[in-house]
Length: 109
Image (cartoon, rainbow, N blue to C red; front, side):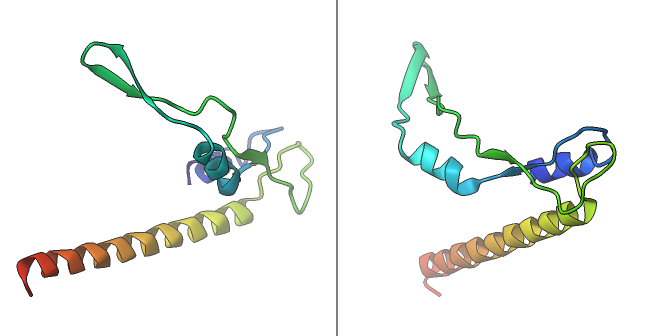
């Protein structure tokens, strides 16, 4: 959603190239790496971050070209943002339902 918001914010910026993220590439990049916790100082622990460029950021290919070199198409970005927001809300509702079921089971209802 952050990448989509950046695209929408830069819809009028000349020569801005719309970005998109390939979630599958990011997930595959993280799954193959060994993320160990390493101590930097005694008592301080940091989770290791992926060192490869598994960002998954890609440039979006526009349907229509703009004269100023900007590849952001506001209607496409807004539709993608709406889809992402709906997916996020659906995920939250599923999690809320599962947690509610667990609470009822713990209470013995």
